[in-house]
Length: 176
Image (cartoon, rainbow, N blue to C red; front, top):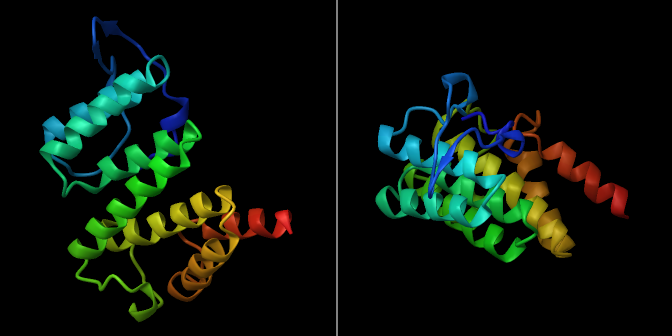
């Protein structure tokens, strides 16, 4: 899943309440997910610039249809964080982490996870990436102790920083 260009996506077409991606090159690669869910996510990404509310509707429809598709949670926590809705971002990321740990057959206690975890993709990587997102969300909410706790676990689970957690650690250090 390459969501790095999510925020820079621009609407290319809107017809009533339908946004679409005009060219395949404009699409974000969410990995191997059902075509209908991919279409909803792509529409949500395109709609986000002009109508975050419409984007949320697409993402919620995808979640209702396929609660086991991890990129749906990614889209939801990203748009909530972008809008400054840190409570919504926290809820979506927490739910996404729960689904990823279920799929990866991990326990809910991250302290019990064996590390380091090598995961180039799949639910394990999504779990690590979402832990990073949760650390960032907690940091932005002013919950430095919780952010620090998550970063400590990420240091143990992903010592090379493959999911980008050192950036959040640097942000936190800069706030000290």
